[in-house]
Amino acid sequence: MRLILFGAPGVGKGTQAKILSSKLNIPHISTGDMLRQAVADQTELGKKAEEIMNRGDLVPDDIMLGLIKERLQKPDSDNGFILDGFPRTEVQAKSLDLHFAEMNIKDFNIVNIDADENEIIKRLNRRRVCKECGKIFSLDEIEGLKTCPNCNSENSFYLRDDDKEDVIKNRLEVFRANTVPVLNYYSNNRKIVTVNGIGSIEEINEEILKGLQN
Image 1 (cartoon, rainbow, N blue to C red):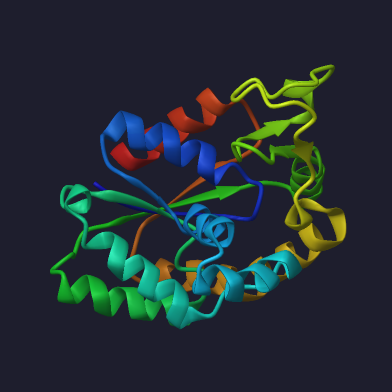
Image 2 (spheres, rainbow, N blue to C red; image 1 turned 120 degrees about the vertical axis):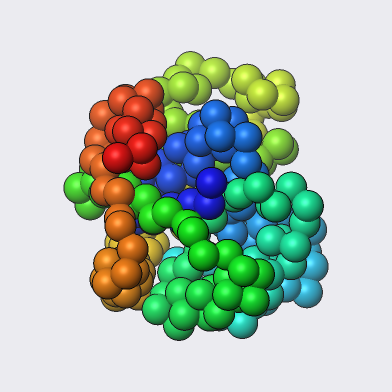
């Protein structure tokens, strides 16, 4: 199965993608994770992308498409994949269609996770990241803790620049301006499974799988 996962920043795409990846036994391809790793490694791409990401703006199409093309050529993608964070613009969507045609990929599913923007802002502003291992937690998960539950590093939690409220609002504006038209583009020739992103992780996952079966 091949999935393209849509939703505003903070709606829970990454969490759902990881669960779907495990259940469907296909790789979760997150452009956000790929970019953050490039930033952490301070590669040439990472250095270019870091400033753009910290503003909450979109990384240029040519860089993103290059990353995706390279990743889809790996053998673990042969039986399917979950694209999380791409395409984010109509130009990217059209370029991806051309690349899919080159790879003889005709069948893929669109999943859109929707949520109230105020809830998204509150959720993202309450995220913290361990600077040692990179794992993301909510404040509820680490309340009262001084060490990371994942790597045991001390006093390592911080609020990512792109999770600060002013940047979140900009990211949502960018999403509305660029990514919502992508859904309109796909709606002309693809079925879109839309689920409510507010609820328990398990409930949302069940709704996605039910929608894909219909």
